[in-house]
Length: 147
Image (tube, rainbow, N blue to C red; front, top):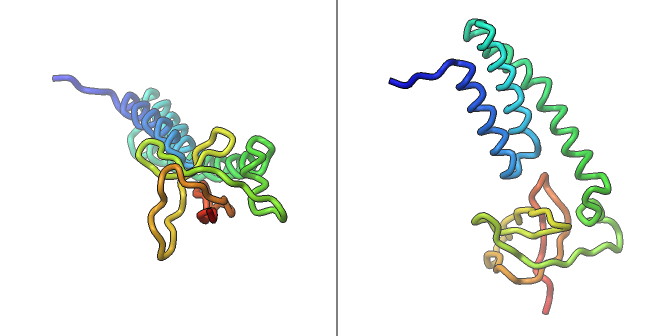
């Protein structure tokens, strides 16, 4: 029967979380993945499982706020100027609704942002034109453009 060492399990969990970051977890999954790599290191040194968990928890408590801060700085920096300017006076961003990996959203400077559900209106239609009003985390708030 095939069995795995504890450090291998930590590495796999860490890699899965890092891959999960691609789905838009605002660097949190990446921070957890890095914390799991600490668990792998501790396991490879023969540290008992309770201390491995403690090490991962402490690393997560340190890394998650750092990751969220890095994500916020990236959102506010010139790395995505159009997204950063949305909501500023006299700045309107018009774009089209797209589908990406089964999710409905918009692309701004090549970055996909899921769209928030509309209140009391029809669902978003792929290809329709919208005006982006702002963001809540990575979710875009928009309204349909008038024809």
